[in-house]
Image (cartoon, rainbow, N blue to C red):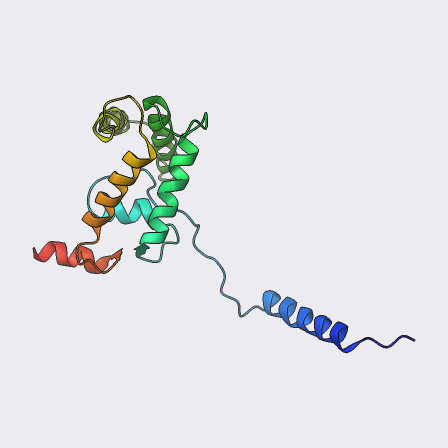
Length: 169
């Protein structure tokens, strides 16, 4: 019978510990689906949290926010040309809105139609240079402004404390 080297024994022992820790019933289970509750957003603190709190912990960090915004932009750029046309921008928003409606068990209604009209208006506002393209720079500008608006107490995160401070002002 061959004897195992000390390194092999250590690797096997480490692997056994790792596997048992992963299988341990004491590990917390993910009881919340990941992703924003209301990915299509809206206005105000509750809408911001519903749109950007990916892990649903009640806090939107700048990293969490920027990562999601970048992902949404990249998904929207369906032809991968580095900018969004109005059609791409609106299609990405509509996909999130449909996801939100399905999750809420809702059918398309007048509110849905109004939000879709607003998506076209929003694109034209965000396209600062009016070239029909939402560039990465234009997207980053709006992302910066939006996060700063949500982070009322300027602590680098958006959470319930920002909503309370906003109510006091």
